[in-house]
Length: 124
Image 1 (spheres, rainbow, N blue to C red):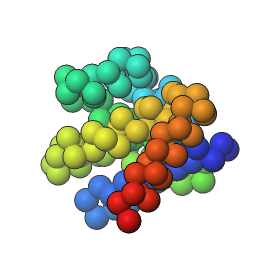
Image 2: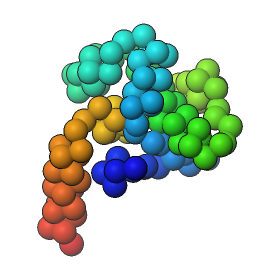
Image 3: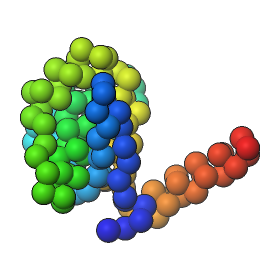
């Protein structure tokens, strides 16, 4: 796996999940959300997304990680209901990150990661 397309974690309620932004996760997202990932990314940026977008992105990332490790994944319905109860909008950035990283060229992701590292160093 490319180091720039590694995993990242998200805490949902009392559980911490690992998300894996892969091509498979992108395809899973598109299937369950019923829309292309590029359109979903744009809607997330504009704040015009539908109810399925954030839960579908988070679920697809969790499923991608669980498939790699042979773990059981929570169902989309259970995850969606959990996100609804605690506020799915809190995970808008995580959903955007998953869709961006899963669908972007490695060079673009590397540039983003390097800029984040530079920003962290300037804060210190």
